[in-house]
Length: 220
Image (cartoon, one colour):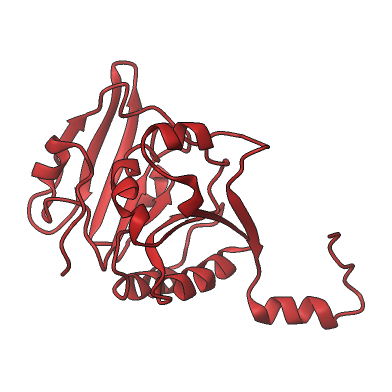
């Protein structure tokens, strides 16, 4: 196991089994999009930006470039990928994590929950990574099994947000309050974002689209 990366929250550091975000392992963050879930990892991403690319796969909104720069995260090191399906997202993630150029990868689960086999494949690919791998899921996913060694929930309350460590080696169930600053969302709709964004399709699907005369071609 590689050296962990600090979340930037000393209280969370102290409660995590690894004393930081684990590397070569999958971390699940269960939260409703837009409740500050991205802010949890920005201190770590700022540390990692000099080591390689930071990949964001299917974020629900475009990152706010100016806000990212204010927290020390250079947007020139971020790549946003949009995949046409969960299968394409998994395939793209496997290639990214095994490429040797990935400093960190963040996945947002699409509408359909990932199946057990897909989660196992992502965890297997995460073991080859040299940095942290995060999978954002809706809170309802907590009811289902996951191979991720670390599962953290983010809950929003009138008194403020709080973290719950649902799963990790050793003690779990710890609850940590978050300040309003640490819960501020850094992702929202920004149509003119200067971040590099790409659409990806698995080569098998791309070839099928190119050779099928009955399917209209997507506009360029």
